[in-house]
Length: 177
Image (cartoon, rainbow, N blue to C red):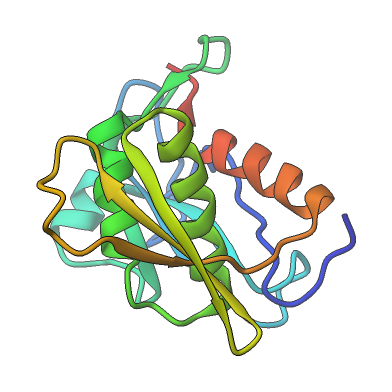
């Protein structure tokens, strides 16, 4: 995939604290974050992972461009990867991105919608088209059908970009643990 503004470049465990540069020791409690990447970064503008020591996080040293965060432990180099984000957390992240108009977050929410549909945590109600936009209307499983559906904008991501975006999201949502 060629890098374009708004594309994603999500990383793995960084091994150092984003607040002070200190090496994070395997087994140490840390806070992993997803943040908007800086404009002009060689990876393009998108969402990036940054890790923080628990001490730095608790003292208020947090990124201004925070999208979401979770607590984990710094992995050993040879440990097997496991899923970090459970279904409820994924659904919460999906909800938190509602109404955010930034292109990378629209794409990120769209991908989460597809994952949640596949996991059958959401169900598609219908598709609305108009004014050169496509909205998927979905509902959470088990919700009262009288509650209005959730609208999710289809950002019309190319197939090859969607594949890379999915791989990057998978990397972020996995841990070395």
